[in-house]
Amino acid sequence: MKETFKKLIINFQERKFGRIVPREYDVPLDTKKIVSLIGVRRSGKTYVLFSLIEQLRQRNDGKNIVYINFEDDRLYPIGLKDLDGLLEGYYELYPQKRDEKVYLFLDEVQNIEGWERYIRRIDDTENVQIFITGSSSKLLSSEIATSLRGRTITYEIFPFSFREYLTYKEIEINLYSSKSVSYIQNAFNSYLVDGGFAETFDERPDVQKRILKDYLDLIVYKDVVERYTIRNQSLLKHLIKYMFVNMGTLVSVNKLYNEYKSQGYKIGKDTLMDYISYLQEAYTVFTTPIYRNSVREEQRNPKKLYAIDNGFKKLFSISISDDYSKLYENMAFLHLRRKSREVYYFKQTQEVDLYIRDDKEYLVNVSYAIEDEKTLQREVKALLEGMAYFKVNISYLVTANRDEMIEIEGKKIVVVPMWQWLLEG
Image (cartoon, rainbow, N blue to C red; front, top):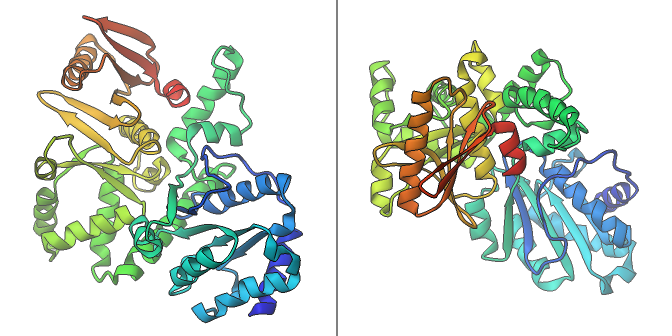
C-alpha cells in the first residue's frame, strides 16, 4: 500500500487544475485545529479542497501538499493498519520535508473504519495541517465532535449560493448597471427552479432531472437506508416526496403519523421521528422550530420544512409555476442557514417566516406575489409584531419584484426583490 500512496502523491502533485469557481467559505489554511468539511453529497467539498490547494501552491512548495481521495479504487481494499504507509511513503519520497510543515488533504476519509485514531495520532506527533472531508453518511458533525474530541473546526458545505452561481456563469454583479441586472434576473429565474448543484448547471432540463434523481437515490440509499438499515423503504420514499413538495410549510409528527396510519402504513411515531432525523443528518431536509424562550415550548409546536436544494422539488411537482411561493421561502431559508445553524420562525398573533440571531437579530418575511394592499398589510403587521418583541428597528419583506422602504413609527421594513436580497444580504 505504501507504493500505491507514493504513486498517488506524485500523480496529484503533477496535476494541473482546470477552472475552479471560488466559493464563499473563509476556510483557514493554517490553524492549530484539524479542518473538517461536511455536507450533502455532490455539494462541492472536494473542489473547496482544490481551491485551498491552489492557494497553498501559490505560496508554498507544491511538494509540501499531499492529497489522497480514499474513494480511489487503487486503494481498495484499505484498512486502518495501511494508513501508516501514507506518511511513511511521503517521507521516503521527500526525506527533507520531515523538518517542514506538510499540508495533508484527506478526501472521503470516513471510508476507513477507525480513521479517527490515525488522524489523532499524526495530529499529535507530526508537523502536519490536516484537512478532511466526508459525505454525511459516515461523517456527521456530531460524529466529528466525538471522534476528534475538540481538535477540529467544521465547515458545512452547501450547493452553490446565488452569488456563487453568478460567478460560475461569469455574470458581473453590478446592481447599478441595467445590463448587468438584466443578466442577473435572467439567471435568477433558472437558479430558483434548477437549484445549486454545479453538475446540473450546463445540462438540458431532462438531463438535470436525471442527475438530481441520481443524487437523491445516492443520498437516500447510501446515507439513510444502508446506514440505518431501513426496512420500510416505501414509507421513506413517500416521506421524502412529502417533504420536498411541502417545503416552507408546517409539519407535525402527530398529523403525519395519523395520515400514514389512515393510508395503511404500519409505523410508530418514534420510527417516523427517526426517519425525519436521518434525512436531516444526511443534509437532505431541515426542520425549523418556532422561536420560544423554552425548549419544551419549541418542541410542542410544529416545525417548518425546508430542503437542501430547490432543484429537488421539480422531481415531484408537475407544475413548478404553482409553487413559486414555496421555492422563494426555501431559497430564503437556505440563504440564512448558510450564515447560522440557529434559524427559527416566530409567531404571536401573526407569523414571521424566518428569524435568526447571528451578529444581529434578523427578521424576514417572504411573499412571492404581493398583489393587493391586504396582503401587504398582513406581512407588515407580522413583521412589526416581531420587531416589537425582539426590540429591533429593521426587518425585511422579500418579494418577486417589489422594491421600497416602509417606515412606521421609527421601524423600517425593507421591501426587496429576492434576487437583490440574496446579493446584498
